[in-house]
Amino acid sequence: MDSNDISFENLPRAVAHLVSEIAEIKFLVERKEPPIIPVKRIPIDIAEACQIIGKAKPTVYTLVRKRLIPCYKNGKKLYFFEDELLDWISKGKKKTIQEIQSEAEANFRKNSRKANVDSNQNLQR
Image (cartoon, rainbow, N blue to C red):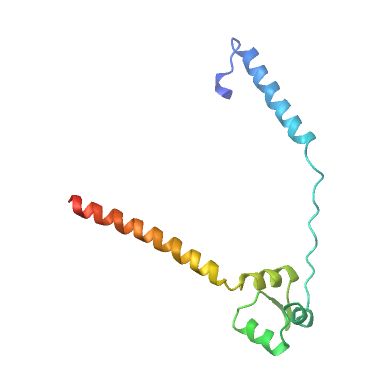
């Protein structure tokens, strides 16, 4: 119901609309689960980062210099977050042969359909 439509004649309808809106809000509040408190992200130093990703310090410094690894610098010290390092590792997943083949087949089918549509349009002209 639009707030501009409220008049003395349609007041009962407006009240009924408000009652249904309040009931819906009450339902949402009652079923709400307790709030999830976010875990504090504690920065780790380069030694811990090396252990997590399994690389030597010089390698990690090289990755930082090339801006290939997520890190933070405050003064002369480097900081990392464990969750960001694990995400970084997971993004480097190499595709299996089956994944590569299925992507190639999907692209081939997509391109062949597009080529068929284009050739049909050219024939119609």
